[in-house]
Image (cartoon, rainbow, N blue to C red; front, side, top):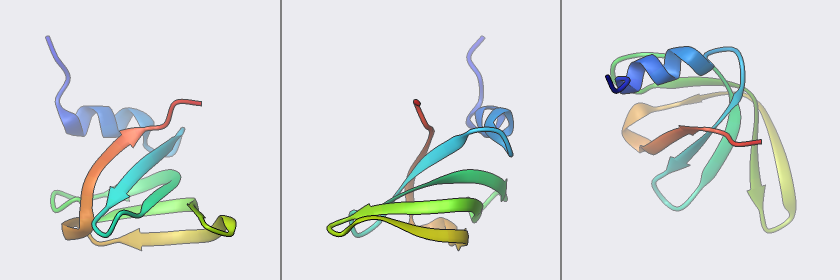
Length: 75
């Protein structure tokens, strides 16, 4: 039986980094601390790779309507 999307998020919660693609072409990586049914996300140790290298963002709250996809990070 296939896993439901929220079950996959529960497996990585507080464990491993996730990659989040946002509207506007931004991608953020961080450890998922929490989420809700609207896909509002709380990330810890968030970072974004930009033109000047990796920018450390720290703890970040991402509004769900900006999220295109979220995926467990492959490291």
